[in-house]
Image (cartoon, rainbow, N blue to C red; front, side):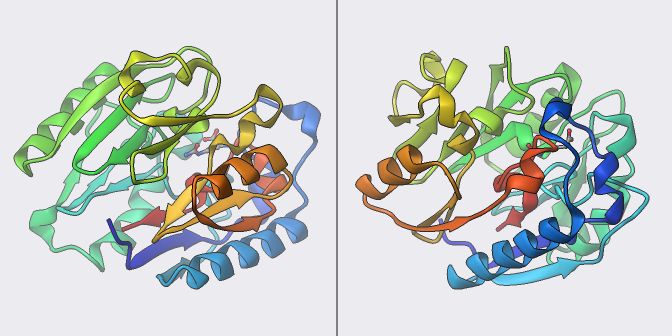
Length: 257
Ligand code: CIR
């Protein structure tokens, strides 16, 4: 795998009204979130990708999490049908940006009653693991697999117990290496990989992203940082504290392809 392009969307001031399961962390600081977003873009550029920066959308507080309304594969793009009502319209906003890179025949859709969030999709080569979650339903997964099969790709479903999205707790770092936390440490689906186990107190940092040989790690998780470096990767850290307050991490903030 090599990524050439990344799409991100600037956070909106309305992000303070974004969905969160952790209100005790407080509301995000918009100015700080913007600075962290700048640092995120700079880190991606350091990994050798072209970054397309889309404008903020005030009507969608969670719209900086562009990973959810689309899934991009080497064969084509899938516009999803996000499972949270306040986020569903993000699909129409991401579509034109995705179409800049793919012709019509290579853009597919998940249709109601199917729902799917891209955060539930983890790519491992030509295999796509999909978490069945509060956001991604059986019909959404069925349509997703049908689209993949049409492209000669394949997928398998992973039932989720505790996490919001599949990639909240498991992320593939290429080369057979997988970061796993919580319920993913023991799931048989991932037994075949070299699993790097994340301690519970650093669980948030299971959401790292591999970009062309470098792994971007959230700032402030020293055990995970060391484990990733010990696995042989160059690393860049980026502070994502303001996105964490909305259950968002590094992967959620971009589409990489
Ligand atoms: C949400 O609940 O949808 C946002 N506050 C966070 C989305 C995180 N995205 C992701 O894990 N892919």
